[in-house]
Image 1 (cartoon, rainbow, N blue to C red):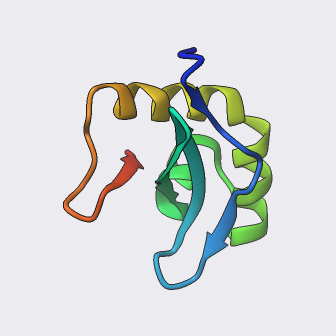
Image 2: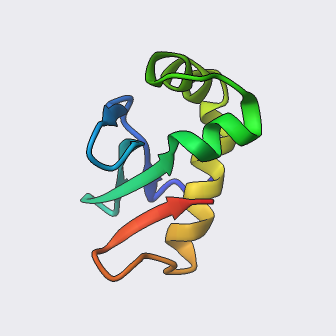
Amino acid sequence: MNQAIQFPEREQWDEKLQAICFPALVNGFQVRCGISGAIIASRYGGDNQQSWLELFRLHRWDLEEEAATLIATGEEDYQGWFWLS
């Protein structure tokens, strides 16, 4: 993984976005990343926010690697978010 990108363990469920949101630090600057509950469910299962958070934590390394690739290639949305799909 790129050492200039770090992922603090501060993920949280966002009810409005229906997604797990987590920060990444890129050369000292914070960016926002997210993965929807529907995507977690389709990949790993679960049927509620608590199970999706547990599954996110269980698969953290793979999801962070995927987010790092999105960040490195500049694939943010119009609001500056990097969304795993």
